[in-house]
Image 1 (cartoon, rainbow, N blue to C red):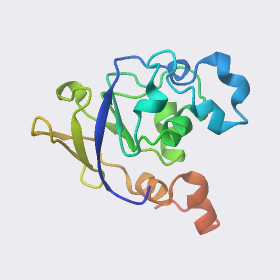
Image 2: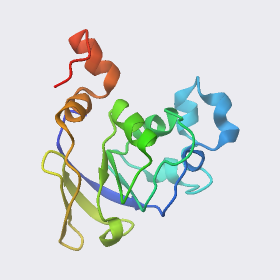
Image 3: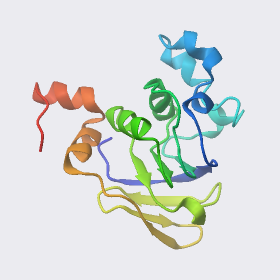
Image 4: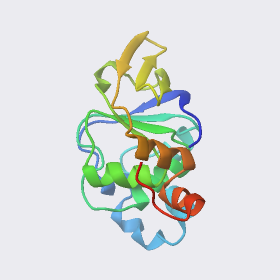
Length: 169
């Protein structure tokens, strides 16, 4: 993730979306084949998700997004589907950090003013979300400098490879 300004459509979800909703457990055997695993992202919750998600779209959820197990594959397959960022009222801590480590921004904001299909513009640096469909302006959490640097490099591993170290800023 090198850009800080994103435009895309909202794919709206509800509250309490678990990592098992993201990757149903019956597909755990595909963890070594991420391309195949990503085809099953949200399969039980949004059966057409793989064909519906377009590069640059946003997942918009309620509270407690990403609860459950610490599957780092969950944010990775979301990113692989083309999702540019996740907007949620709240997110499970471990999911939030796994997403940052994979280079997928998670913005915490009041998602009640966003409907499925709304066109959004997000300025990650400023923490500003403009709903281009309703002209509503929302604010989100601003990423701390270290998380911003990790996101800028596309995730924790590229960040470390570039620096040959883990520099705290």
